[in-house]
Image (cartoon, rainbow, N blue to C red; front, side, top):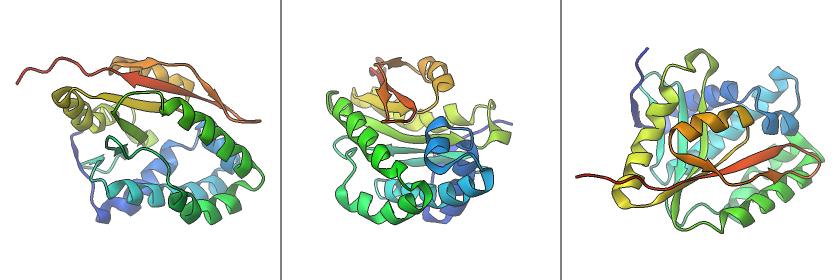
Length: 202
């Protein structure tokens, strides 16, 4: 199946949330947060990803495919920091889903943001996920392309944190380089990655 990317709309949020919940079902960070039971995990992550996708949609930098295989949610330069109002909005859902792990999750988020803040102006890939039955078909690459091309045109870097070690090589194929790791207190690791803009010929 050939995948092509398009900008997501509010009407896509339900399908995007479902696709992302399935995509992250085996993700170490979300499994630690929401537990190993698939039914329970999907119930919480579906709502979490709908909320997060809607938040990123305000920046008009959410991309999906023509068959809604998943989503790439980006923050434009200067808008990557997690606002207190965003945390307050999602906190009741996270608290119900994670219990005591929420404190450790916030600690890990703070560690990650301290590292994030050391990089120059950039586009931030907050979420990328492809539903399992559409993986390894080019959907992830297609959804990355619009903003990576924009980074190259504008001469700006791109930044992400991979929550799954096996995805590091995929991001490496798109020019991202590993920049260390972040330990969540009593939890898993995530891996910050940075991409320099590539020369662009008009």
